[in-house]
Length: 152
Figure 1 (cartoon, rainbow, N blue to C red):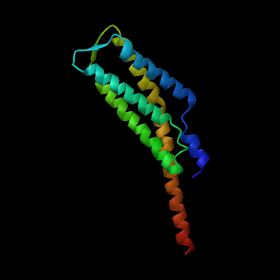
Figure 2 (cartoon, helix red, strand yellow):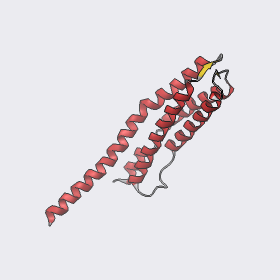
Figure 3 (tube, rainbow, N blue to C red):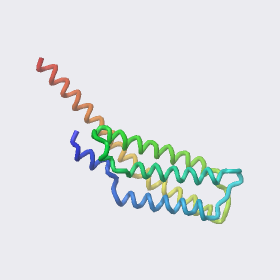
């Protein structure tokens, strides 16, 4: 596995990072300072926690993986971060269904939808790319095994 190719693959595009960060910050701002409410006790705290958790998962996705020594492990880490982010986003969506009032409800919903759309437009492509890299490594290993068998 080419170390530089893997590094390029697991490095998230800076423009996409900025868009996601901007969308997440707007969502968090609305959740903390906006006029949104829930008729369910404790729901707003849960929503804010889920937004924060999603931000932490975004940070993990954006992280530099050069500290991980093996390229295969870098890819696995990137895939794990992506799956964890998807799970966090699903939990946020679930918690957000309890937000049902306030003057900024429409803005909150639009900002959540914007973050989801930005994320789910590019993330599957990234995940597929990483999975292809991992698959290619196993194909290379199989090819090497076949060559070793034929050499005997």
